[in-house]
Image (cartoon, rainbow, N blue to C red; front, side, top):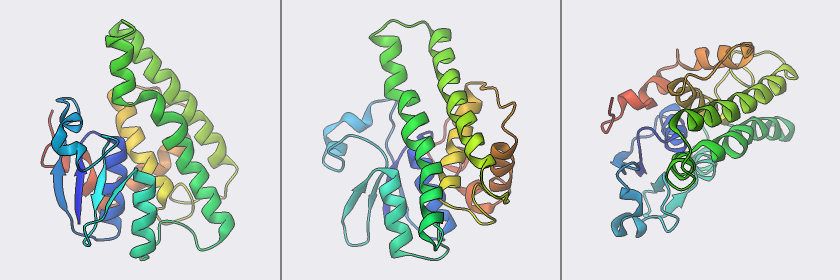
Length: 213
């Protein structure tokens, strides 16, 4: 398999975690978002949406959108599972995952932040305040959801799931913007557990070949 991705992309990070958790080897193909490589014709031929990540399967099929990619990997390589065996459990994990991927991330990804600065002429600190506000609001909601679930080592239970694949990249990015993590006891406990797992360590940005300071 091949993964077109960017070391700092949260969505790419999610997929790298899933690949590492499943012990799947892949070719790492960097696409530099800040330099605009995702908008060039070479990558447009790979991803019509000009987004990362894109997974190329062993059969040459191309898949976009991190959540779809991870569920594909979970279906084609079911061990270890990233979704619970029961329907209610799967719905719970998907809800936690989508709270990050659909509620927090879209407001704060790179193209939104660039639009705020370049098109709307928002000052740098105001942009950072925007980022911190929406991330913290989302993480507080995430914490409230976790409080309704039985306590486990990870977001849901005692093994990593899709929810953890989403949480860890979001916390990494939130740390870059000095987000306030107070009051997020269950959330940060799950993050800390994840970061003791070798798969999460191997997938993190500092371990990527295109990593930059």
